[in-house]
Image (cartoon, rainbow, N blue to C red; front, side, top):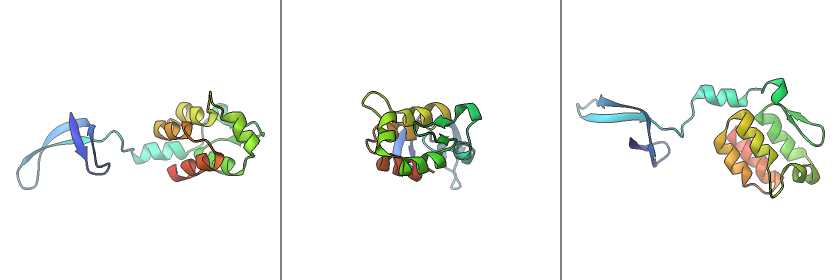
Length: 126
């Protein structure tokens, strides 16, 4: 069922839709916006990934979470960034999608063309 999310300010397909009665006695429908992420999901995205899932960077860095990725993107050389981001692939976006599970961040990282832009996107997401 489509509904208007007051936080996103958009109409979306809602999850867990149920009928409710408002405090003034009127019938309404309530649901959960799929764009909103629970605190538990956010906490899991900020936690360290399992040892075998860490991002192994071309310059030797090992990144285990989004904070470390953000720092690495700000500090790495342009050559290292270009090794991981080409016209055909974006290793940072793929890792965020597959390992961290943040589909929204992955999508915007895929379109970032500079390391400073990618670093800012990751920092803003945390």
